[in-house]
Image 1 (tube, rainbow, N blue to C red):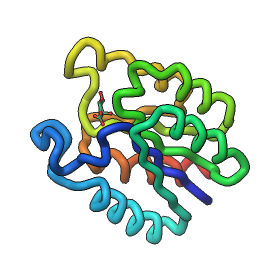
Image 2: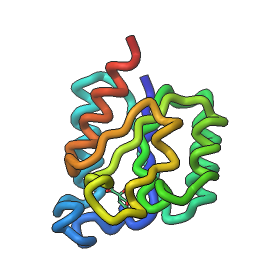
Image 3: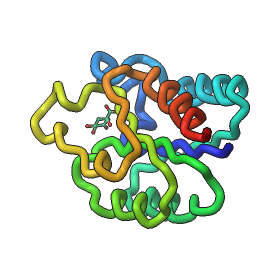
Length: 143
Ligand code: DQA
């Protein structure tokens, strides 16, 4: 099983960015934890991060036929991007949405996800562990 993990804008700043909201781990450290778990679960994993909506759309489009599952934290694009949502639908790959923070316990504008209706499910509010939960969920979906 091959899984692609996509992180959206400003998640390259994890560790430094509002640690009281997003925690102190860097994206590299989170990805390392995912690599270790992927090894244990015997699946292949790749990572992509971009601050650019079009690059994320392109990456989702190119994933067709190459990956069995997408794990995505679209970050701010969660709340705005019809393009990312449409790309997920077009690619047809089962997608799990992840957020470090509980988006429903924050500002009003974060409470709506354009991605959630086209995702298999959403995990939010568990910090970096959410990515590991998503990986287990992805592998669990296989059979
Ligand atoms: C986030 C939540 C979004 O509202 C925010 O724009 C982010 C991070 C999260 O992981 O909690 O950049 O997706």
